[in-house]
Image 1 (cartoon, one colour):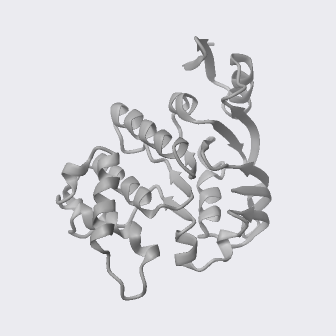
Image 2 (cartoon, rainbow, N blue to C red):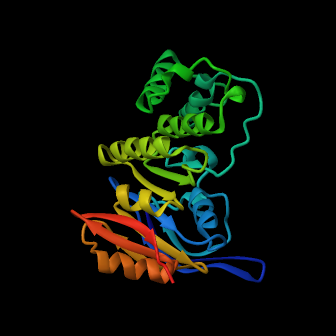
Image 3 (cartoon, rainbow, N blue to C red):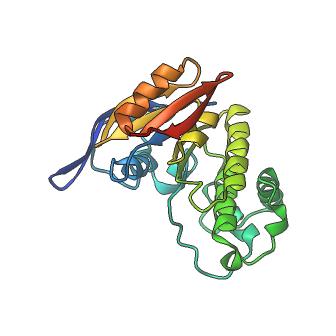
Amino acid sequence: MNIRDLSFSYGEKPVLRGLSLEVKAGELCAVMGENGSGKSTLLRLIAGFEQSAAGSLTLSGQDPRRLRPKERARMVAYLPQRFGVYFDTDVLDIVLMGANPELGALGSPSPAHRAQAMEALGFLHIQELAFRNFAELSEGQKQMVMIARCVMQKAPLLLFDEPDSALDINNRRHMMENLSALVHGGERGALLILHDHQLALSFCDKIYFLRDGQIVGLVDRATATVESVQAQMDQAFGHIKVHGIDGEFFMGYKTS
């Protein structure tokens, strides 16, 4: 996915200004920034839910904003902060929604699709939830199920808006380990909105820092040093202290 000079406004208010970034197949990337910096709007633009944007946006040579919904769903799997499933249904049926881009108007999932849905649940080690009522799950369990639905979708780009928000500390790491394996083991790329600096630096190949609708920094994990990561954190946040031990980065807070 390539974005060049993307800008977006709500009425007269600019939200994104001249923004450029790239997510390659096999890359797990994050976008970080303070509340209101434009992160969720960026993902909605890429997913095609916002249309009035200047600049270029391409995925496999196409602009996903100009595709029909099913065509776009074959290219982008989007997980918003809040998902509107409030009815009683089995978890397996939720995951099977990820097969919808492959089905015709009156089509229904095949036995092969059901097997793939079970594999997606198994990939996240939650296959025991398959026949539970989705409405009765904890918020963290629901989040993992919705991630499984996106895995089932098999789109080349994953867009997750705060996928760790409802998860405890162990499941946050578990989720990132599985996403890392999924992305680095295949032809998918992923762009996540994260607020956990430690999680992002531990698992993501690149971290884009957004402030006031603009990219103000980039950490490339392959070439990052404590000094370069500290400089980027200072640009975006200002209160984070970066420590390095054996090639890994650890976050703390600056004291006055």
